[in-house]
Length: 588
Ligand SMILES: Cc1cc2nc3c(=O)[nH]c(=O)nc-3n(C[C@H](O)[C@H](O)[C@H](O)COP(=O)(O)OP(=O)(O)OC[C@H]3O[C@@H](n4cnc5c(N)ncnc54)[C@H](O)[C@@H]3O)c2cc1C
Image (cartoon, rainbow, N blue to C red):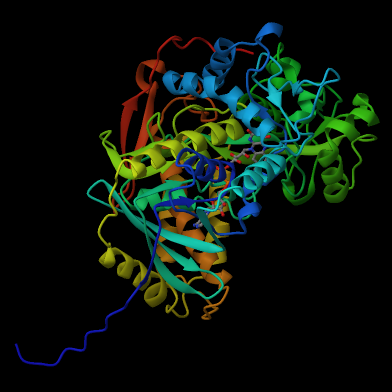
């Protein structure tokens, strides 16, 4: 064939390490620390985060971290396991729960040794308080700033090692998996706008949850489900994505979290008649029933007219701490007081706090095995790839997570995956070949398509409409009609996204571009959530279908797996690991 062809060759710059840790929350830092510890500082670790390492959402964790520390006072592994399995509405894998529960106390003691300022009892021992769904006070805490101190302690301890590098403000855009093997990832250095391919023998995905997919949420702006979406697009299934937790007490109007510790310390929830309405819904546990039950009860009170009218249509209820006394509030809940005063003009020592349920935590996530290794739908492990923390579904939390079990899971699974990945690398794992084509395709997708499109759709409008859709149809209560509408609207938004326009065409700190990529990720995650929720015709844990109000163990005691196809998610199901406890009626 005659003719002259001009071949444009893009050269993507390559960075190589042994192990990539994507995300620097509690899970990521704990994983990097364990990989450094078990290898004696010998393997070369890189931590990548789209914000400064210490600004990950984990610093916001307030109320505590679960662990059995007092068998002599009546707590036991058995009890923590049972509370977790019942809290999960029996969708948790019981082998994973057992392993998790048994490793929690060691993590608390390790952190103590590394300098964690745990709150103490008067006898000098580590203090613990009550939390929803736990039948023993086993929330270990540092006032109401537990996550902040855990992050600080992990970071300080990591500084003892010099085998790791940090990539703060680098945005990962894709995870590359070929033939069931982790091949690398692509990322944008936000400062310069330059695009890179990272190669490594192994990686741990620790990118956190997706709470920003709703409007009223306790989650930081950065919690946009990136890791879930990237894994999904790489062909890895997402598990149980229909289960999303609403925390009962988001501060009105901002959504900032008022920790469950406020109720753990004895706070009351009251309606506009001054009644402690939880007596109707969970007479034994009252305000300390699991979150799915308390959130549904609060929404019923608001819907049936026993709430207060708030700004922007945000009906609310009262969280009353006034009977606890100033001293207890100053000592145990200083952050709650500061936040209530600054953001709602209310001093909880004197007045009740205005609260309503807020989007909080994703029970679903990347499909992994009990070692945190990423799995394909048929159960084959992806070589060299692990995931830990909120981005995963192990599954420990099943259909509803108990408070304080997440930071605990981040610690335990950060440790497990860090050790597993280090072992794999030290065992002689080879660096996979360069995935040049995948990196170049990704570079083109971002810089030649998304960044060059003109006069198209506004990414912020798309994100806002997605959030409103999720609020309205994929919220605390769901039904078939609403979920069908959600799937349809999200698909329309995905079509519009194909013409999305980034107004800022610059390279350096192009936050317009980053927000656009995040919106794309949220669209994928939202679609999987809505499709998974539509299919599950029962009510279990946080998934409450008004058209199917009962739990249906005969048909639905199984995990959902959602697989990427160009037409939308394809669902398959796998069994729940039931070892000791068969499902019973869940009452509190
Ligand atoms: C306000 C609040 C209070 C909470 N309180 C408690 C509590 O008291 N007890 C409890 O057990 N749980 C609590 N939780 C839940 C718990 O804190 C979280 O589930 C947990 O901290 C998540 O940690 P993580 O390490 O998985 O991810 P995160 O801490 O969310 O970190 C995610 C990391 O991934 C990085 N990242 C994400 N996407 C990208 C990308 N595209 N490129 C590069 N980097 C990326 C981010 O920069 C960040 O470093 C709370 C949650 C909130 C929101």
